[in-house]
Image 1 (cartoon, protein in one colour):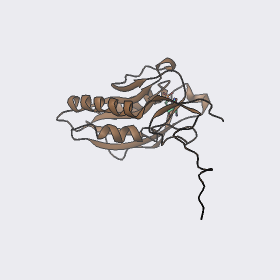
Image 2 (cartoon, protein in one colour):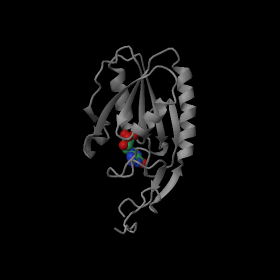
Image 3 (cartoon, protein in one colour):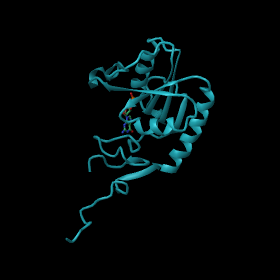
Length: 188
Ligand code: 5GP
Protein backbone atom coordinates (compact mmCIF):
# COMPACT_ATOMS: atom_id res chain seq x y z
CA UNK A 1 0.00 0.00 0.00
CA UNK A 2 1.36 3.41 -0.95
CA UNK A 3 1.95 5.81 1.89
CA UNK A 4 1.53 9.52 1.65
CA UNK A 5 2.94 12.14 4.00
CA UNK A 6 0.96 14.96 2.41
CA UNK A 7 -1.56 15.06 5.28
CA UNK A 8 1.07 14.86 8.02
CA UNK A 9 1.69 18.29 9.50
CA UNK A 10 4.54 18.99 11.88
CA UNK A 11 3.49 20.60 15.11
CA UNK A 12 7.08 21.52 16.03
CA UNK A 13 7.71 23.53 12.84
CA UNK A 14 4.27 25.09 12.70
CA UNK A 15 4.74 28.53 11.00
CA UNK A 16 2.40 30.06 13.53
CA UNK A 17 5.05 29.55 16.23
CA UNK A 18 8.06 31.76 16.85
CA UNK A 19 10.63 30.13 19.12
CA UNK A 20 11.38 32.31 22.14
CA UNK A 21 13.37 29.89 24.32
CA UNK A 22 15.04 26.85 22.79
CA UNK A 23 15.14 23.31 24.16
CA UNK A 24 18.86 23.74 24.92
CA UNK A 25 18.33 27.02 26.76
CA UNK A 26 15.63 25.41 28.91
CA UNK A 27 17.88 22.43 29.66
CA UNK A 28 20.85 24.64 30.62
CA UNK A 29 18.79 26.92 32.86
CA UNK A 30 17.12 24.01 34.67
CA UNK A 31 20.53 22.53 35.38
CA UNK A 32 21.56 25.81 37.04
CA UNK A 33 18.33 26.05 39.04
CA UNK A 34 18.70 22.41 40.11
CA UNK A 35 22.21 23.05 41.41
CA UNK A 36 21.00 26.08 43.35
CA UNK A 37 18.07 24.16 44.89
CA UNK A 38 20.38 21.25 45.74
CA UNK A 39 22.59 23.62 47.74
CA UNK A 40 19.73 25.52 49.38
CA UNK A 41 17.85 22.39 50.52
CA UNK A 42 20.84 20.20 51.42
CA UNK A 43 20.01 17.89 54.31
CA UNK A 44 16.27 18.69 54.19
CA UNK A 45 13.37 16.89 52.52
CA UNK A 46 11.46 19.50 50.52
CA UNK A 47 8.03 18.73 49.13
CA UNK A 48 7.71 19.87 45.53
CA UNK A 49 4.15 20.82 44.65
CA UNK A 50 3.47 20.84 40.92
CA UNK A 51 0.56 22.89 39.65
CA UNK A 52 -1.33 20.90 37.01
CA UNK A 53 -1.18 20.73 34.11
CA UNK A 54 1.26 23.29 32.76
CA UNK A 55 4.07 22.77 35.28
CA UNK A 56 4.44 19.00 34.70
CA UNK A 57 7.29 19.24 32.20
CA UNK A 58 9.24 21.80 34.23
CA UNK A 59 8.62 19.86 37.43
CA UNK A 60 9.84 16.54 36.08
CA UNK A 61 13.01 18.04 34.58
CA UNK A 62 13.69 20.21 37.63
CA UNK A 63 13.32 17.29 40.06
CA UNK A 64 15.87 15.28 38.11
CA UNK A 65 18.32 18.19 38.34
CA UNK A 66 18.05 18.30 42.16
CA UNK A 67 20.43 16.01 43.97
CA UNK A 68 18.89 15.81 47.41
CA UNK A 69 15.96 13.91 48.92
CA UNK A 70 12.68 15.33 47.58
CA UNK A 71 9.00 14.37 47.60
CA UNK A 72 6.33 15.41 45.12
CA UNK A 73 2.61 16.21 45.19
CA UNK A 74 0.23 17.81 42.72
CA UNK A 75 -2.50 20.42 42.91
CA UNK A 76 -4.94 21.57 40.29
CA UNK A 77 -6.43 25.03 40.52
CA UNK A 78 -8.67 27.11 38.34
CA UNK A 79 -9.67 30.74 38.47
CA UNK A 80 -13.23 31.70 39.15
CA UNK A 81 -15.13 33.56 36.41
CA UNK A 82 -13.92 36.89 35.12
CA UNK A 83 -16.09 38.85 37.58
CA UNK A 84 -14.18 37.51 40.57
CA UNK A 85 -10.88 37.27 38.74
CA UNK A 86 -9.53 40.49 40.21
CA UNK A 87 -10.14 39.24 43.74
CA UNK A 88 -7.47 36.66 43.06
CA UNK A 89 -9.70 33.93 44.40
CA UNK A 90 -9.08 30.54 42.83
CA UNK A 91 -10.85 27.22 43.10
CA UNK A 92 -8.84 24.22 44.23
CA UNK A 93 -9.85 21.41 41.85
CA UNK A 94 -7.41 18.87 43.24
CA UNK A 95 -5.98 19.34 46.70
CA UNK A 96 -2.91 17.79 48.31
CA UNK A 97 -3.13 14.24 49.60
CA UNK A 98 -0.87 14.93 52.58
CA UNK A 99 -0.68 17.44 55.43
CA UNK A 100 2.14 19.94 55.01
CA UNK A 101 2.56 21.17 58.57
CA UNK A 102 6.25 21.69 59.29
CA UNK A 103 7.27 20.83 55.71
CA UNK A 104 9.53 22.83 53.41
CA UNK A 105 7.38 23.49 50.34
CA UNK A 106 8.60 24.36 46.86
CA UNK A 107 5.72 25.26 44.56
CA UNK A 108 6.61 24.59 40.92
CA UNK A 109 4.67 26.65 38.37
CA UNK A 110 4.97 27.21 34.63
CA UNK A 111 4.38 30.95 34.41
CA UNK A 112 3.61 33.90 36.66
CA UNK A 113 1.47 36.40 34.78
CA UNK A 114 -0.74 38.74 36.87
CA UNK A 115 0.37 36.84 39.98
CA UNK A 116 -3.22 36.45 41.21
CA UNK A 117 -3.18 32.65 41.16
CA UNK A 118 0.18 32.30 42.86
CA UNK A 119 -0.39 34.90 45.56
CA UNK A 120 -3.54 33.03 46.57
CA UNK A 121 -1.90 29.62 46.45
CA UNK A 122 1.24 30.61 48.37
CA UNK A 123 -0.83 32.23 51.14
CA UNK A 124 -3.10 29.18 51.26
CA UNK A 125 -0.14 26.81 51.70
CA UNK A 126 1.49 29.04 54.30
CA UNK A 127 -1.76 29.04 56.32
CA UNK A 128 -1.57 25.25 56.56
CA UNK A 129 1.49 25.56 58.79
CA UNK A 130 4.29 24.82 56.33
CA UNK A 131 7.77 25.53 57.70
CA UNK A 132 8.66 27.40 54.50
CA UNK A 133 6.97 28.08 51.17
CA UNK A 134 9.09 28.98 48.16
CA UNK A 135 8.33 29.29 44.47
CA UNK A 136 10.06 28.01 41.35
CA UNK A 137 8.61 29.38 38.11
CA UNK A 138 9.89 28.71 34.62
CA UNK A 139 8.60 31.98 33.16
CA UNK A 140 7.90 35.45 34.51
CA UNK A 141 5.71 37.83 32.51
CA UNK A 142 6.59 40.66 34.86
CA UNK A 143 4.99 43.49 32.83
CA UNK A 144 1.53 42.16 33.67
CA UNK A 145 1.96 41.75 37.41
CA UNK A 146 -0.97 42.88 39.58
CA UNK A 147 0.05 41.15 42.81
CA UNK A 148 3.58 40.98 44.08
CA UNK A 149 4.89 37.42 44.02
CA UNK A 150 8.41 36.51 45.09
CA UNK A 151 9.90 34.04 42.64
CA UNK A 152 12.74 32.28 44.46
CA UNK A 153 13.92 30.24 41.47
CA UNK A 154 13.18 31.76 38.06
CA UNK A 155 13.87 30.28 34.66
CA UNK A 156 13.34 33.25 32.33
CA UNK A 157 11.73 36.66 32.22
CA UNK A 158 9.65 37.05 29.07
CA UNK A 159 7.84 39.94 27.35
CA UNK A 160 4.07 40.33 27.40
CA UNK A 161 3.30 37.75 24.70
CA UNK A 162 1.12 34.64 24.79
CA UNK A 163 3.45 31.67 24.87
CA UNK A 164 2.96 27.94 24.40
CA UNK A 165 5.07 24.81 24.64
CA UNK A 166 6.94 22.85 27.28
CA UNK A 167 3.68 22.31 29.18
CA UNK A 168 1.93 25.56 28.28
CA UNK A 169 -1.13 25.21 26.09
CA UNK A 170 -3.57 27.07 23.94
CA UNK A 171 -6.91 25.23 24.25
CA UNK A 172 -4.99 22.08 25.31
CA UNK A 173 -2.77 22.21 22.23
CA UNK A 174 1.02 22.69 22.01
CA UNK A 175 1.92 21.34 25.47
CA UNK A 176 4.25 18.80 23.82
CA UNK A 177 6.53 21.33 22.12
CA UNK A 178 10.06 20.87 23.51
CA UNK A 179 10.63 24.66 23.37
CA UNK A 180 8.74 27.82 24.39
CA UNK A 181 7.22 29.72 21.49
CA UNK A 182 5.12 32.82 20.92
CA UNK A 183 1.81 31.87 19.35
CA UNK A 184 1.57 34.46 16.61
CA UNK A 185 -2.05 34.03 15.64
CA UNK A 186 -3.98 31.96 18.17
CA UNK A 187 -7.12 31.66 16.07
CA UNK A 188 -5.62 30.64 12.75
P1 5GP B 1 -1.83 34.56 36.80
O1 5GP B 1 -2.76 34.29 37.94
O2 5GP B 1 -0.40 34.77 37.20
O3 5GP B 1 -2.32 35.68 35.93
O4 5GP B 1 -1.99 33.33 35.86
C1 5GP B 1 -1.12 32.29 35.75
C2 5GP B 1 -1.71 31.26 34.81
O5 5GP B 1 -2.21 31.87 33.60
C3 5GP B 1 -0.64 30.30 34.37
O6 5GP B 1 -0.51 29.23 35.27
C4 5GP B 1 -1.14 29.89 33.01
O7 5GP B 1 -2.04 28.83 33.14
C5 5GP B 1 -1.89 31.09 32.47
N1 5GP B 1 -1.07 31.90 31.56
C6 5GP B 1 -0.60 33.15 31.76
N2 5GP B 1 0.13 33.59 30.71
C7 5GP B 1 0.15 32.57 29.82
C8 5GP B 1 0.77 32.41 28.52
O8 5GP B 1 1.45 33.28 27.96
N3 5GP B 1 0.55 31.22 27.91
C9 5GP B 1 -0.20 30.22 28.46
N4 5GP B 1 -0.33 29.09 27.76
N5 5GP B 1 -0.79 30.34 29.67
C10 5GP B 1 -0.62 31.51 30.34
